[in-house]
Length: 171
Image (cartoon, rainbow, N blue to C red):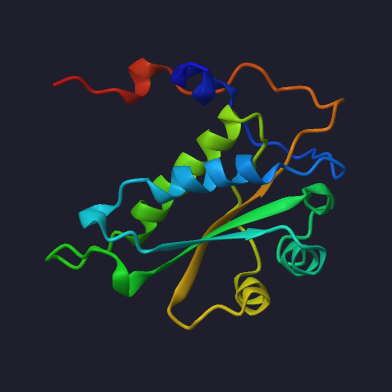
């Protein structure tokens, strides 16, 4: 698929086929896209948790309790360590930027593979930390279900975005 087509095809899917798990090789290609993502000073301050077992899926689903989330066969969690991220002299820490880049790479890789995602940042943070038994220095940035849409799922079509003339500034 051409890259612009991948970008145009990506959308937040909330309708997963629970009977169709994603093959391991496809999941590994998605994770690899995150692994090779750029990060400030190449510090790579991240961990990617791929949840596929029934017991862990049930724990994680309680952190974002939406009916459609219970159908996704996999959940990807992107976390990082603020102390391992690059810092600018004025105090800026690159963790969120680095994790955003890695998550974007994986979401677009999933789209390229025909795997649906839905970027989620609003979840029960403490419950998720406990479910994953995260270390004190690990911060969860975002989660996404991974799976194939149900056969009856209809793509939304045209993206509702501002015109380029509203967002691009040419100097």
